[in-house]
Length: 315
Image (cartoon, rainbow, N blue to C red; front, top):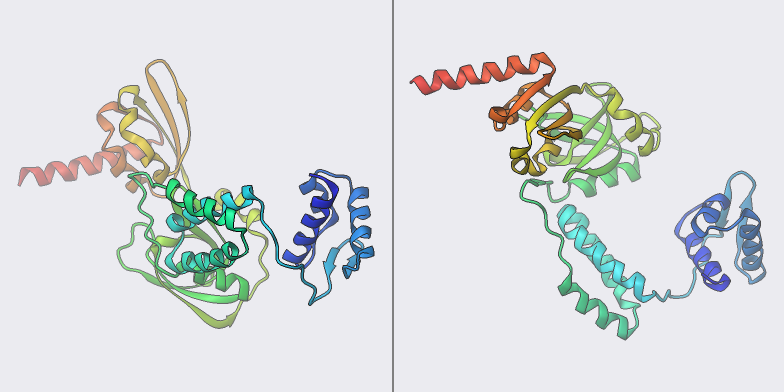
């Protein structure tokens, strides 16, 4: 990237955030802090009203805006890929708002780029695998993001694992993340008086209240790095015949799959599961070709299921 393009990109980044740190700019453009300072001086000399504060970062005076932006062909192509992902992996409300933003973005493209984008739309698809069952409500993700941005408590109806009826919760969402085909939110739960992990498709209803957050929460990254250590997860290690590996597919990810080790005859798999009884039900599918290494209590759950099945078959 030449210096002119870099300075233009810096200006765009300054307009996209309230405060931008010099180190963030240095990391993004792979330049030294001295070069960042020199580029900032260039922008200031060109009349851009930049304000800088030591230890805080740079910002632009409110009201200043760059003239309409021209996107490169490479950037225009990424918009279409992102749009396809949004269609498959977000709720209807978020997808609708993204599509509205895309119309505005496409409106400033050059005619040649518009033609290229329209052509690409028919050549990109995002397909879910057969085991994905993400049924987030039409506005769940959008409401969670609204709760986070406005710092307003969300009231949700939530069906926890192993429970048939939903229960009401008041939560303070910290952030949302996507993992193994599901959206999750980590939130402070007023009922449990602790941070909990909620899966979006188990939220049957959500409303934003007028009640403000009680607490100031750490960034989502901090919780993701520590949350699993605090969850009540149980370690499971099983050994399966290589002949049945192809039947497991992506199912393993829904039961807390962590890692696997392949030997000549067997595949040793490690899981962190929320519920041994639920894991036992899945294990029955591969039980004839598998062995439980730990914990021994999982064997008890499997034997109980087999006993119940045997009793029903006798009737």
